[in-house]
Image 1: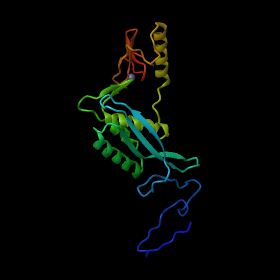
Image 2 (image 1 turned 90 degrees about the vertical axis):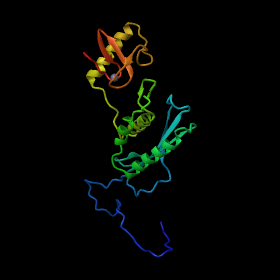
Image 3 (image 1 turned 90 degrees about the horizontal axis):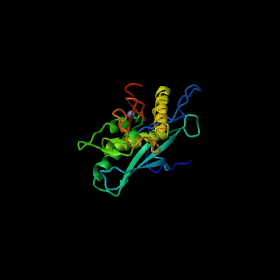
Image 4 (image 1 turned 45 degrees about the vertical axis):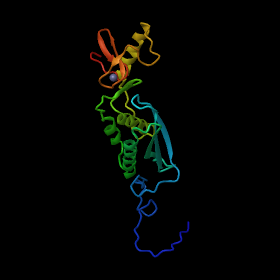
Amino acid sequence: MTTNIDQPIVAFELVKTAANAPQTEDQPILEAVHENLARPEFLQGATYKIKPPIAEHALYITINDVVLNQNTEHEQRYPYEVFINSKNMDHFQWVVALTRVISAVFRKGGDVTFLVEELKAVFDPKGGYFIKGGFMPSLVAEIGYAIESHMQQIGLLKAPQLSAEKAALIADKKASLAEQGVNLSEGFPDSANWCNLCHNKAKVTLDGCDTCLNCGDSKCG
Ligand SMILES: [Zn+2]
């Protein structure tokens, strides 16, 4: 590619790239996100819809990724920017500010997974709200869960795995409930209580013992 320089050169710096950096077979130079990375023309993304009961309209959270080390064994999608759209303009100002700050953190590079825990830990002073399958401490937290889900999708975060012991316990309790004719088509019975550990409406009492059918927390398992 030829670049015409039609202005005097006043300064220059050497850009480290895979091509001019010393490279060994053991340590290939990998692409990473850093603040000087130019935004690629094309980004792949995903949009997550959330419908918090405190908002009049649904919110659409779009996260676009850059693909690093494409077509190599180190290929990795990495979040680059986030946008949130909604018909509801009530929260518009702080939502725009929040997405710009999150995008800026993404583009600084490094490990950005800490953002998920920061956002999920935000509690609404008005008390949060219940969504299908769980309690949401705030709208900010729900945005955090959407970003977490995206990071799991692209393999940046691992979804928490149940231990074999807990999975077996849950399967055992579900089998007992099914025998009693309890409807489990929604995953958990309607009569289930809130689990204080995973915040899902999934805690059942069986044989005098409280067990969460989502996270496997049990007082006597
Ligand atoms: Zn639980």
